[in-house]
Length: 54
Length: 459
Image 1 (cartoon, chains in turn orange, green):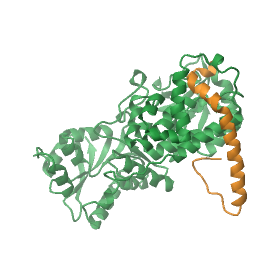
Image 2: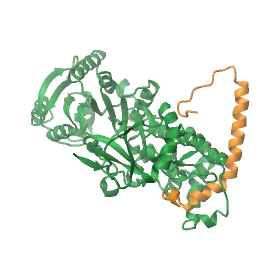
Image 3: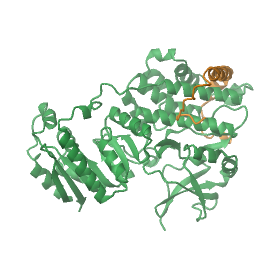
């Protein structure tokens, strides 16, 4: 496979697949948590985080 | 016409860098045409350039370097000084890691993905960590994991964790392991308690075990149809972000951290030194300055104020960290703190010894600042004064140098623990040695001190 020319190693590749379910759940929880925090902090200005450009 | 391929640029079938008559170009190959078009047309390029995370380029109409494979040629904006991860402070490395993850998150939103996560692809551009490799993006394939995950862990997470949890000097492992710290090595070197950190446990310890467990296993069979959704990949990226953000290193207790609070000269002497150095820099108006032994960069900032881009180098990780945090919070764009041991500057490394340039190979500068430095080289490292002069002359045409005599308490400290085998270490001896290589253009004694400043020009 061409896109594998930078071989990530089977283990690195498979580890991601193994933690995929966990990762998706943690993202969902994180997103909900951020929404809750935003709800309670909506009067405060959001701090700017120059390390992440989101 | 003088044209050649850049030594580090051979691995990617998508294209390569070349230099022609002093200008840097990037040839994009036909093999990368579809990805390049997607990068430009999806809006990803514009967004990354706007946020300062990708070095911009122009498409130019010049002769292809290798016509058989060429799609087009780009002229990237030039990064004033290329630095390597083993020359970064902890904070610089951490920001480079976060920049890489931020770019990957952004890329996923635009239907692309980074195919590599090399720390060498990040440079400090206008003071901000930015990706320099325009050809790192490929079309995202739904269901696939992040192909650069291993490289990210080796180039960023492992060294940062080792610096934070074991010793900041382990950054130098990258000098030996050019493709990042092998994860089994990182796992062995990290304290056992890092297994309680969920991110480090998964991305380093478990990752190392998985690599061993599945070594030589064909991925297509072992994955048994498993897929990784885009959300799952985003989850991994965000987890890596959180893991990196939590890593901290505070420059406490190192030798130089309190240097400026402990100098042995008066306010008037400092004021006068600042004034003289500032005036000389204004007069020679250098474009690129190397401040060697810069500490936390006080005099580097004089050079930056005089209009130069300044490489602000010091041997002490704490000083470099302080310098970087200062430049980051002030949003300075023309100052780059780097970690540099002058007694053993970075060599040329990698394939054919041409992948990473030596420190001196990235010169010359227009001017070198060497303030309160010569006694360290001459006395602590036993370098004869004329060789010190020859070394500086190899770094740049102009030199602003300070001579600190033996009577000075700082030099006395150095002599306390060693035999005084330096009979020529006098102002006269210093001038005679440097005159072999330089013309002395100006000299001034620093008020209320025994120290002398010189402005010299290479013969």
